[in-house]
Amino acid sequence: MERKLSWYEAISFRTSRRSYTGAPLDPNQLHAIQQTIATINKESGLNFQLLEDSSQFFSGFKRSYGMLKNVQSVIALVGNKKTIPNTHVQIGYYGEFLMLECVSHNLGTCWVGGTYDKKATESVLNLKEDEELFAVITVGEVANQKTLKEKLIAQLGKNKQSVDELLLEKEEPVPTWVLSGIDAARLAPSAVNGKPIGYSYVKETVKAFITKKNHAYEAVDLGISLAHFELGALNEGVSGEWVPETEADEKKAFIFKPNQEY
Image (cartoon, rainbow, N blue to C red):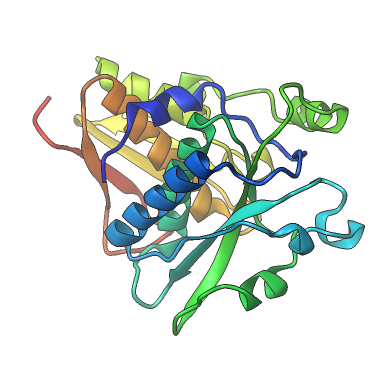
């Protein structure tokens, strides 16, 4: 799957949006999202699904805690832990690429782990044997200006990590492409802004790893961060892939393997 530079550009203006207009996706947006979902599912073995009318899964104060308003469409992030190693990491990694695709089409988005009716959502999904729903991404038209509630929530998570806070260990000189990747990873969202991910650059090797627990979403957070780093590196002309440092294990580090020597 092509990693698009338009996704990298979307990183700088992506922000969690929780209040939507309720308007349906227009045909062009719908087509772009469905195409990206099909490409991701083919590459990853995941089973992401777009639900165009999901308002009932967020209705009522009990389910959404008043945090999400006028949700119309969601992307269900579905996978199979028995057949896909590091499933939570893959959910975060590919889910963030998909989110950035939506943002590049001027849509509002938000990662949602628990503040929706999961059972009701699963009841309308096409779930194969052993597949489960890990999270959803709300997606839809939003107003240009954030609501007061959105602004207040944004204030709580506005302090982003510095490069030095994220790159916990390094050996100089650090290549420009690595710094670009770290800079992009600084802007990666995480559950309740927990920031549970760290990086190192030692012996010319980039490593990303979980530094602490984060409400059981730290492995998803790691996947999201890996996607951001990869796009930042790509912006400097370096492509590559992430591989587990050891056998597939969500609690272990991932190593970035460039496609050529640098």
